[in-house]
Length: 537
Image (spheres, rainbow, N blue to C red):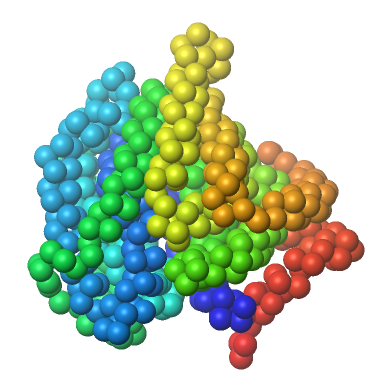
């Protein structure tokens, strides 16, 4: 457990710094473009395209396949070096082809992700897309290097590298504001020079993020060189496993594009793509710091135990990891829920934008607990080289995502919900779909390996909920004492961040205090992990 704790501490520290600088990046961008504007939404749509296309590759090949396959390869007499060189060569070739295809298809991709009612936004997004889509290659190289480092138990660089991207982006956004002074919020007013400066900055940051990982490659103990001799190398297994997850990721992309096209209907009038992206960023902060930092080392361990046929240890890993993750994530949910308004103010240039963003954040929060459990459940399937089952329960989720987004659009067209709540309806549908997906995934994993001790999880979640409800109410009380929606926590972005930290700290203290009174056993494990951050540990 000590090695997992150390690995989790390294990942959590890197993820925290990465996410905090990522938050600063978004704050600066909102300061330059606003959060409810056509220009901001056009850049958000274009900058998310390489992320979406990369997810097709990352989810389809890297996370689902690479870690288990590298773990198996490194157990061979040759240490897995030749196999990994072939794998990398093939990966880079695939990335280059995908990047070229995406560049050619840029207008069509933007067309799918935007509303036909926003033609000026669509034109600006296409211009941004040509600058942003080369990120696919650099994202892919970053993930190939990072996942291999993780599989070799070199956990730090992968989580620290995004700091470089965020610093470069912040500098570029500030330069954009300095060079062009008042950057237009209307899509029709942008010049090619503005587009090149903003889009080029975003892509440069991703390129440096990828290249810095090469500095740490020596720690893997593996040699890496181009190798095009793919026949007979065992890559056929990788292809078969990746096929299902590629289809799964493709379905996810299609659902995401539909959500984006619905949300951009509100661009310029209410919360839209940029607000969704910023709310998702806040939502992902606890997920990244907690779930990825603790869950990633567990995934490596689960993969090792599954490869060795030690199924009882896999079941024990699942139970321990979920109970530990949920302990932290429930506290985060209570803290963010209590601080929803000041947290939304951080990513808004004025009060009205903050009020429009708050419902979106709350809607996303509903799905945070299910996604936490799904992280471990889904990766357990991957550890057993089963990518077909996750495909089917993800298809189910994607169908629900499309259905709920369609329902939100219909309710808006019938004047049942205002344009200001359209994005919140899309986010709520995402959470509902993720919750039902998780329930089905748990059931399928139980059928596959049995002995998941689901009752143990549920009793732990019950304890955490008992502590979280009064803790969240205490945090909300602090928000009201600080003036509520008319107080100082809502008067600026920096003050919103300070208020969020104060409210969150109160929630966490009350939460831990109640669990200590209840003598919750998870406190011991959590304390052990937190001590790994202290000097000399």
